[in-house]
Amino acid sequence: PEFAVDTQFTEATVFAGGTLQARTSAQYYAGGALPGAPVAWSVNATVANYSPPNQSDYRFGFQSLWWYQSPDSGGSASIQFNGQTDASGHHDLAIKLDRYVLPRPLTITAESSVQDVNRQTWIAHATTLVHPAAAYVGMKTDGYFVDRGKPMRVDLIVVDLEGKALVDRPVTVETGRVDWVYKAGEYQEVLRDPQRCELRSDSQGSAHCELITTQGGQYRITAITSDADGR
Image 1: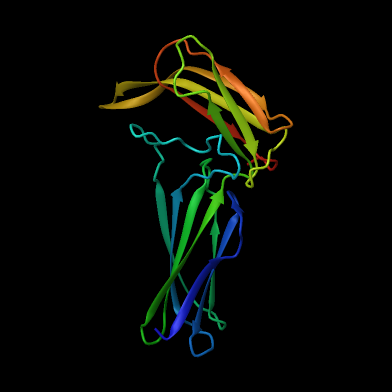
Image 2: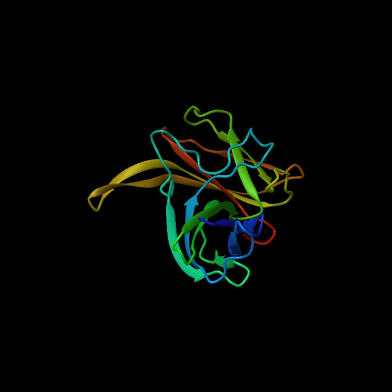
């Protein structure tokens, strides 16, 4: 092709509920813009994980195990848009994130395909991470196993995107023993003996919860926090 295409997101940090702005630019190598050229967009969203820096002692996001994967692990969705470049060779795309309710980060990839009058096509793409909130909660335990009847201590920390502690943030911890029941022709997962802790992070961003293990088995622990904007 006689032209180059560049695609970028205009914001460095984007949160759920906001609008993600993408721009593609088509310029001739010889100089000058490529106006009025058809642009085909393909936008893909994939469930991701994010671990804030300097907090390697804690686990953030979903813990993948070789014998079990999260129901939304690897989940993705795609959508397409069409337009054309303006007089300056640009085309802007606004991606609304108002239907984003999953409390997990998303990897968003925007790919643009631009074609000139000679039907020469050039493709460029950009990728960014959309955060569900400006706060992340991490957890850790003393180990993967505990004797039945012995309380299980769960240590938590609430931090911002840079890994800095956040004070007085709410944390809800929910746990249950994983069991399976046969229903409607298939095995379905249920949580038995549910427990819940309502906490707030201290001056170090920390909190902890002790859970009762009355029966043997596999337990699932979920911790949820929110940022100052209620996300």
